[in-house]
Image (cartoon, rainbow, N blue to C red):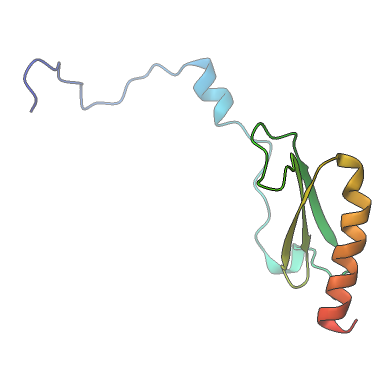
Length: 105
């Protein structure tokens, strides 16, 4: 035991702060059963995407935005870096063409 450090009681406290309660709140558990999980039937059927930025630090190429595309079927992830958010559609078209070339679909 460290000298000068007060001992903390081993018994849990009955006090629960509001912030702790709010941090542990959730409406309902997510279903983990395979029959209830929606999954696409093939490549490019369902794409998950997220746009990030502007980032404080630029990439070596000077980009301040990034977009991710995840194919739900294959779980293939691609990240594109951009100078402006308006480039998202262009990057999606690139992603789609790359996936078609890679899969032949």
